[in-house]
Image (tube, rainbow, N blue to C red; front, side):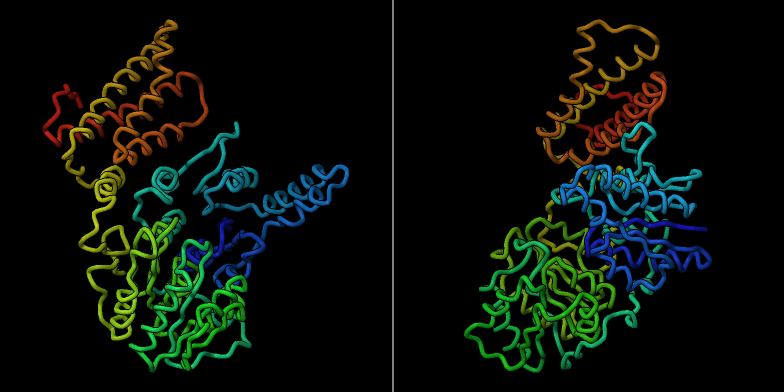
Length: 490
């Protein structure tokens, strides 16, 4: 059996895919595991010894004829791309797992699918429209991303797409493949990652200065190693400017990606924003203090190492330096995090326990659970939400009536057609009226998108079936509340 896994995203996504790749090989020891990544992130995947064959997208070669603006450059680029696709097609994969939720990856999966392989993840129908073949991909399309209320970790999303259960033993990399030539840090030590992939994700120079002073004062026996990319060298200099810490070492910009594992492997803790080092901590089981703000969904990308905790706020001002210092102290002393932070502990489908004071997104998350794993529907204590549900029911009844007429072969007059065309805008307006229902409306819209090409009657029948399921959900919610004056017929 040949299995191809596509992971065309960045460092963090590749790192979060490694446990699932390890589990895939553990469960399929005789299978030949292939991994396709972008050339830039190949060094990450090379740390996974369970991958048998590595492929990279030749991006530079593909775009070079166009960038050089030579005559026929577009044709040259297309020839290189088609050659790359043909090489993958010749492998004859029996299973393809697309962990990249992107348009390019979906077209690529369609192009290399020969002999009807089993496919998980985005692909395309024969007419070029998006195909979402499995339930986890549908869940991702509807519920995952910044600004949404998903609480399932990306590591678990990837493992579900691969059809594996990840065990603690799967969180590992082959350290023998990590770069040598890097001096091991003085023990005991803590890693301070001062940057992140985006500037707005990390603490300012002023905040880091505050933290370092508190760290050194509270735990003078610890050696602190500041790490980061070459672009963050000046920031590291500014942090230490005017300070005199004999046990703080600035190695920002001085290490390669693979050397980061050597530096982190014996660390007592890693402190930083949502970044590569949090994922390294997860793979090495090094506890992390993760501060989270900006364009981040902590539930999806937080560190999974034992003892980790996340400090969340809308901005760095909302995360007191005293709290960060206190959490590091408790972590170093082997104590659990306070109830003011997100604590690492498996909690049903979630990987964290939320602070007691946190109720942000609770309604939406309960609604998501009820839709996908059969939990109870959340209680509705808002007349606005109840009114929105009733409006959804009315629109659904209208749509189902029009669809049935078309299935029965009855032509619709112009006025009826206009009404039918307004159904989507009406549902959009209802969502704006009651944003907490967004998970429900996203679920419904995604199920409609999953309807594949077919005859008119087939498409109409499948559309009617989706509307019927939508009505059943609406009915269940309204009946559960026992406060609707609308006549419900589930």
